[in-house]
Image (tube, rainbow, N blue to C red; front, side):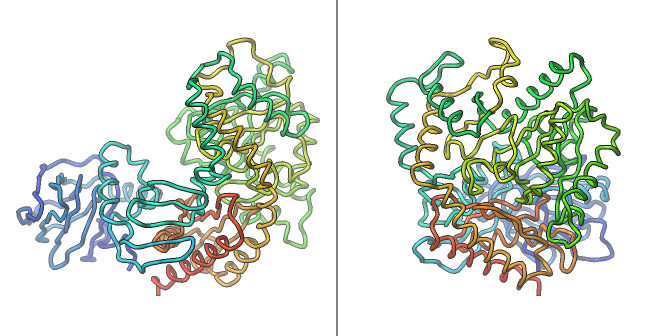
Length: 585
């Protein structure tokens, strides 16, 4: 039985089984609010005329429906069919509060929304085998009850969108390990979503932060600071030739929006008119969650809320080898010219005038797939841009700073960039991002026309500077390149072993992605990926939730990892895949 499935969805009659959801309610009528004290039971309910929905707002409960009882946690939603006796018992130390609703709306539409929505991990403690190795320790239930209590409290005050990660309350992190306060230690294959390239709590980075705090400058807006000078100079020095100027920002989305602004402004400047403003991005790419970044992103679902989409921002297919035969370099009939002509046809299909294009913005490797573009394709794209006066911005927010075995992943393509967006691993810690670019493009705005309140915050700037110096001094870029072969051999071996459910494996350096599929097909399987992550975390291996369309598990440990823990983590991952598949037998 799937761990999230307890009853089937409403509308599935004549089946008698129903479902427990971890989902929101809309357009329903609230029938009441009930508080149940610890150890006490709610009144029994039996409603022959109405179908009810219970929402557990806080605390933990045992929900009895008919002859079956199931433990549920804060935020869970239970559909209860008519004519079933039902009762709720509070099993948490604090009072339980729940609402109950009736008149379920448009079931078909609601079910479709649930299917498309990202999953949450179930708020239920599980007894798991204890683990004691050099790199992993598990000594409690996972998730343990104190963690669930903290998470339940968090969910009272945070939006539901924050509830998608495995249910581990991080207390501290050091190097390649994450700890809770209850004796558990995880080997980290998440890098805090590709941030901690130099390791968690890197001593050099930590000391730089403390020194700047003690020095006494925490904020200086756009007024000059030595910290900002040192960092912009360092970034300019290590960047490939031609990328001479640096604009410091805070988040990756802020950097990609800035790049869009610069490309459009440049297009108008060189054309002398308002037509050269088209921005071309790629399907499945991710550039952030602000309006401009999501408009540029490659997820149609992510753009629905915008409604009035900019008609001069266009999305074309990423040359994805899993989706398109013409992009699959492993095929005997592949050619760069064929790949390019097939891709160019998508531009023509949208009737895009080449000379109206201000710029292209691909992810250097595509985050949801960890897939590189064919080198020959990118070389042709660079030539196309030069011929038509367009710019290329490489989004390196997650792929930069050594992750791929080069400083910037786009360097694998052997082409020049006009702009590069950076973030995440730039500090291995605090929030800071940057746009690095050609001086003539970066200087299109005059004084005070392109600024940011927290640009080059001195504490963040010192963290970034220390991080970069540590990476260079300890050859973390080389370490990622050297360990690539271990990841490739092991993960490709997993794909061969489980070819019916692992659709593809892509990666470079210490960034790898496995896409899990329905058995024997190319249809993705988010449920399987979700179970594998949960089991891995229960075994002491930390992943973030599956990405892309919810079926890609990313293997992205800190770049300070060595061969021994890397191999241990890969084996734990392999065992979790076996365990998740066994649940389906």
